[in-house]
Image (cartoon, rainbow over all chains, first blue to last red; front, side, top):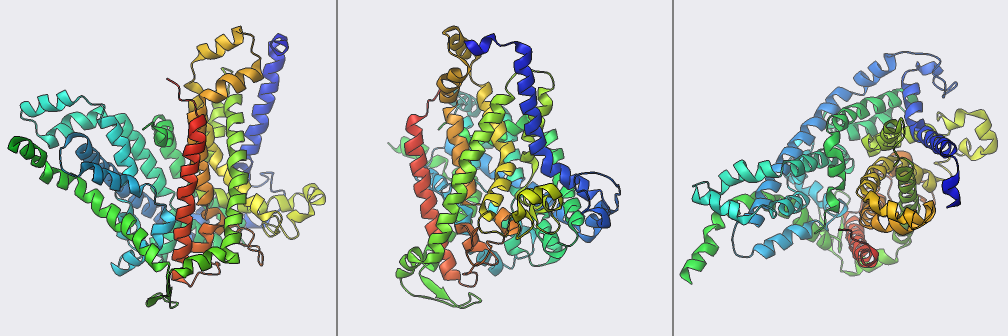
Length: 276
Length: 304
């Protein structure tokens, strides 16, 4: 109890001091990146901590020389395709596992769950050969198709579909509403929060993919923003401010997405923590 | 009987239509590659990987016994043993620190969450710019170099003693936003009454933390540990961008994943060996998740 008798003001000052110190440490890499991206090339190594000169030219150069517009576009196309298809395929398969009767249901569900145990590291090696033999290197199909379905999403949506009373489904079918209708009109609207969380999760996971795009992209134009940053790093290491400007540009879209969808963020990040 | 059978089979066409798309993708891009990788692991291929022939399952034991594989496993373990406990402790510390109703607390929460917006490439390039010996930020701060000459010569990422820890710091930083958000959400789901009744019972701040907060945070911490561990074992982008698996010749930052996919990996032209290492990584990860759920799961307190 001794601690609790200390003056309130004193303890809150200690807490503020700790908060400020931690905030400075966490913001430090972001701060130095922004400072560097706003300095002209000849000034970047002098006083790296002080924003003593200002230009937007470097950001412009990074945008054009690094072809970041094209790469951001590619990332957006792939992430949107992947997200939409993952939602669609997850809704359908979760619906089948929750509301339909068919033989070997447990077996098929076990197959889905088994895929959750297989890490990307094992499959990508072979998937590169598959994508190559389909002629899909350097294409949107190649970037997206291997990720169009997810057992994780199926599992997550099945958890919430199972909470919908079976009576509701039977009543709907007596009213002449078939399974597709029930799915569209009742089941999907009821689980909208989970869909939002899953959608954000899928989008972030796809947008942040690094290994796969570097594996199947050999043409400059088909890079995503992540593999594009890798190119920028290997080509221009003597121009650190250019790389830093590229890094800032690459970070902005996802920052916007997170601010817009911040309500879904916590659920999206903790989606895997649902109890079985 | 016939009615029941009819009901059992009635939904089959619909089920096929609904499960079909997922099944095709999961079989073609998850299950088939797994089987194919297991098979490829006992083959030897030419450099273009166009022709492969079986050399026997002994290739797996050869890989297991090889110095390269063992060193990569050791590096991966060290990487996980740095990033997971430190990342978890920092996440808990920040979440507890910011879990109070104070003025401007929203600002600090936003700052602590901010790194969730950085992809591995963005985070790694920011740290590359900090740590580079020639053009880096730290190398151009005079007094810092006087205390730690390693920053300039040979550079934190080029010294075999500091390379892995430097990559680990960048990785911890990049994951901190995620850890903070998840643990904060866990803290906020703990009923305030429990804290208050512990307070009434005379438990001090630290005892309330260890006896009430930590146990109730169990499921959240288990989830965070599992995610951080699997991220550590699968870390690739930060190594590719910061060190390329080096410094050579010790390959101090060549993790198992980098050994498979890295552009300067010693087996980069040997598809068979790569597949064997990938399958062994899969087995390690399987064992690890079984261990985490058995060992930690028992001690986790599931509230409500």
